Image 1: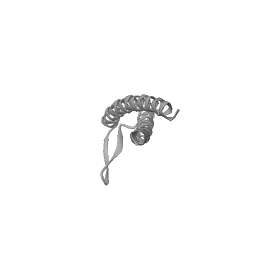
Image 2 (image 1 turned 45 degrees about the vertical axis):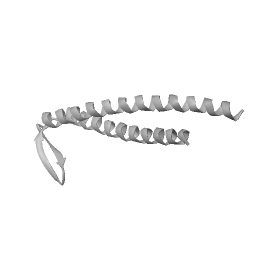
Image 3 (image 1 turned 135 degrees about the horizontal axis):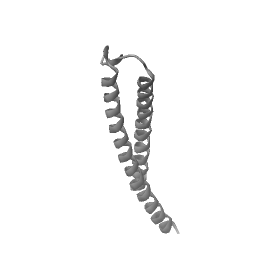
Length: 99
């Protein structure tokens, strides 16, 4: 039963990590677009409105968000490693018990 709980936790962590990685890819693409843009202003969606802001301000916000996402992904990877290790240990114990 505990083994199944760890499997579910691992599945949840993997889904969260994948979601964060997709968000990180979107941030990277947005930063690339801003870098290649020659405009001084860009639009940012805030809630239900679009606001015109200087490109550098938007880029700074995106880079901060990107950094936070990278930290969260690293944390998820550490959690994934711990759960995977625990599952391997438990699997080994279960195999011994079944013999």
